[in-house]
Length: 112
Image (tube, rainbow, N blue to C red; front, side, top):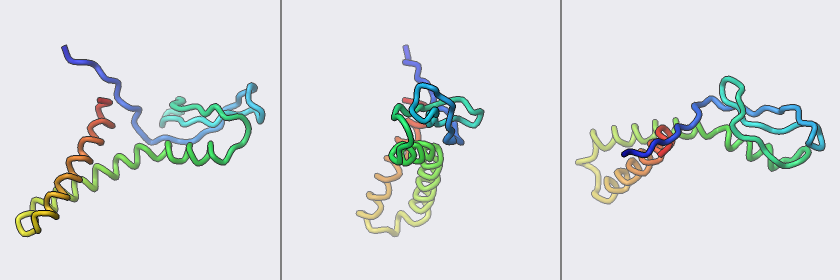
């Protein structure tokens, strides 16, 4: 029987500050989905530049995977049209990059 996997929450993700009386400054930094539902809540107390930097990086994940998917598609197109004329090493490198990108985007889409 196939193992069921949860799919990641689709983007666009945003950074929000939710009221939280347990925190020193009274707020929690939270990554939310497009509907405002919390995905990630940071546990650090008070204002912290690292929290903001980490929140920015996590918020960008859906966009990065979309970009990776587009880059893989562009590389595949290059291979289809110019692959025969490319040096073998270049072709193999591009094929490897496409395969790695497709593997990562599959993990992202399917949660496997």
